[in-house]
Figure 1 (cartoon, rainbow, N blue to C red):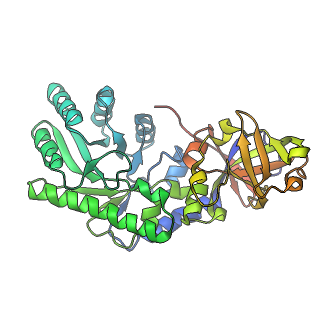
Figure 2 (cartoon, rainbow, N blue to C red):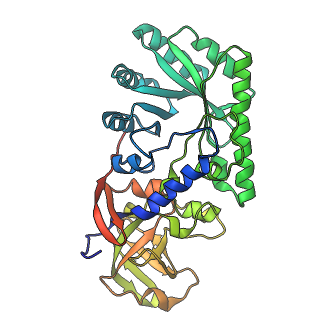
Figure 3 (cartoon, one colour):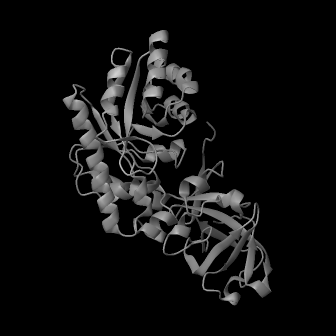
Length: 374
């Protein structure tokens, strides 16, 4: 970077981004599935466009604000991947009336009943996926539960169509080996295939069988019975993914640029102007075999510097020190030195910033904005 940017700010390495996207495309190419990438990680039109070889494609969003934004940009097939709440029915209905093929998610009778009543009262059609719990990680209905059929029967004739099932192997993020990730991938697939079979036997024909997790998508060996894969962080990767063995540290495409502002030499600390407001409070690597603090410290080329990490973070101050306790190594960085911090969680760190300064071959190419809010 020829000029010094004011810091902290978010950087995006275009070559790493494109390589990560190509890796996912190549992985899924042998399988007869659609990639419906989750854009909550990037929340950027320019990044999302690069997820597709040409034109537009189906995406997953985590907010209706994202649905508004990407629909306005020409994305017409969107899954809102969070259980729908009644205060969002009107918003969803507006998008559908404007021509968006919006798909909603629910996993309980109460939500189903409320949506069915709204659909009847407003003569509004909706398309929903039933969320399946494949690992006890979060939301969803067990794959063999009679509740699946009960919800589908309740919705029948209301204007709400059950188009499919979806799940997310969240426990894959706690894996200790690639073998464990592969096991979670098998479990994830089996859950939605079994749920599909149950609904099919009850007379409900599904067109969408959807799974989604970057670790399981990249290490799955069998996607038979699956129609689409939702994954998002694969485009950027982060230290949690590196700690799982899903990627290498050198694959991480986003980093926070920060500047040295002082030292506490007797403690072996270098102080920088990126605290948790710039890096996020996410400490996802603390549960892994190597705790990366608030992020790995790199030079301007994106290469890690020794064993330096951001070991502590206040709101606007980051504290850099040696993971091994070497007092001298961190304080060699003089005031004004600019550094790049690789994040624990790309989604959380990126959310702290309004956009990306895009780099290629070390040169700045431009600025890509992000959206925020709900």
